Length: 361
Image (cartoon, rainbow, N blue to C red):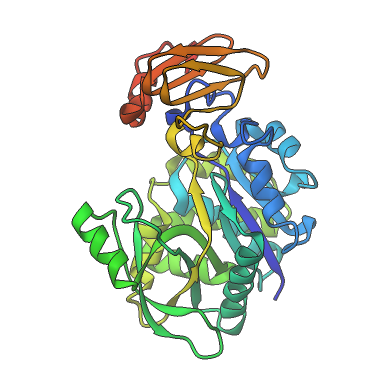
């Protein structure tokens, strides 16, 4: 079996406005030390998968930007979505193309909006995931981040029995949707749960067969893409005709949850004890920056007088931002828009974006 990788690079990133826009979403913005999240995700798998077997699934409108962001990505390995249809269809699209190219393809599904360290631990866990699926193609390998606090914004995976010969992998007992604070505290205290990372290792053909059983409407459309790829035909045309009609649904809900209780499939989990940052809001982005003695963080020159816990970002590295007497405020400056926001209301940025004219979104 040959190993492949697919990075999901969809999403609009509206909570990171005004830097993340419809023309340049967060995964392509070079605001992590001058690099984009997608570029970092591409580097993360460089030592695992040869360049010729790395794919990226993203909006077709970002084709040129993605090809520039991921060095070595072959144009034929860019899977362009004409419209976003959530993660089941991104995974199914990839499985359809890979199964047509290689009936024994095994691929990891990675995300483009996380920072993961240390790299060596990530690679070791991925190697275990691949080994699990290569030993038994009916397995779906998932990865659970070892939690460091009772987060309520993530789904959880409950650990089952150990899988002999594949330590530290275990059987997946169940998936749990985002819990309330009390349940999250209980999960973390028990040591039997990890955060659902949204990363997987899968056998392409098995994925298609599982979608056929659990989501036959999706399967019918995805097989049209598969058949076009197998015949060497016009894949973009098939995708354009099929994709808009596919119902939106997540891969967890449509595939992983039913597979975890299915007699013909097995869902396994590899605990991943890494530092894992989901860069989905200004607060999570700010955690990637060092803080001064007053808790202030900035990606550009900033001078504060009596201010504490202020986060400053600018698309101009020479632009200086100054504050007096502020506490727990976010300031993001771009050439045509500026955000000033109380830190505790950072999640509401996406609602603000909906109020703006299309030219600023």
